[in-house]
Length: 177
Length: 230
Image 1 (tube, each protein chain N blue to C red):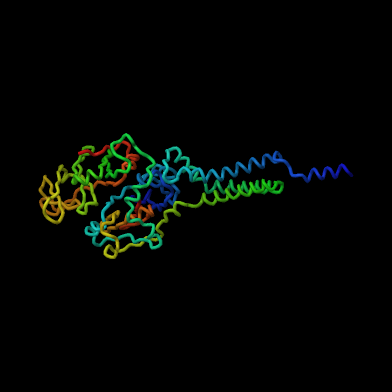
Image 2: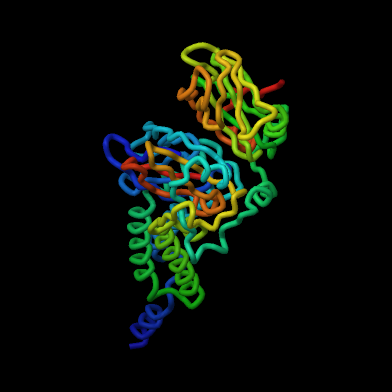
């Protein structure tokens, strides 16, 4: 009688860290993968920093694959988190929860273009006849002409939007500044 | 400015990053990464492709509308008007420069007019250009005319040849409207590079794409560029 109740007490103790080493390892690998696929390109391609050619290549390669890879890695991370949750103590649960938050953030941001939050694109470009425009005559514009169709894009606007997909006299052009 | 058609398909570009002051863009159709200043695809399915340059001008609105009275202007988008900075030139000049070329003759934020003829690039310091306009030069054997417009801010570059013969151009000092005179045919030329009177009347000079840029940016993408000296 006494021996079996001792055995049950032992079972009820929380397992040590070295129990489930594989689950923890895979949890970390999945978490770091997700986080890296977002944060490494985001760090490399940040404004006002010089990008060496190889760093840029790495950033583009990661960013290209990020939407799919972060999804897979994030799902794996959640899977291992659930496998670890029940037997984790309070601090480890907090750590797991925080990591999952970071992982979710990375997986979501990997599919969002935050550059367009900084510089909104023009959704439906509209044009005015030059006589209707209120632009100051001294303001600089980018001008393009195809045959008889002439269009002007104020630099003050293009310096914000950066790129506009337009079509002039049937010719699709990208206006960039 | 570039055409958007590659392999017969019109691509739609979006902003995808800032690379040393120029930006990166991607196309929605293939996700390929393109460099804004070169129009080249640097990574992705269309890597190695190049967009075709569209000849464009940097003019004052006032100059442009006299040339194109029936032209259209991009309307400002109401909700972003507070982002539009009419004072962008001095404001951008204050931004940190992330790459510099200390052993070159110009300072990073010096403004230049950059052009390239058959792969040979040359930069014309803006201050020098404004003082000397019209500038006559020769790059890679091609005679060039780079000229400041009547508004003192617009500029254009042309091949200084009339019917295959090299020509020199000078500003006509006295009369209105603004015009140039060439020494070959004694014709008068307007800022669009077309002869308005004289033996060459009706002919236009070939345009050379030219970009107004900061020295550090031009030098970064044209490492072998020469600099114009008078």
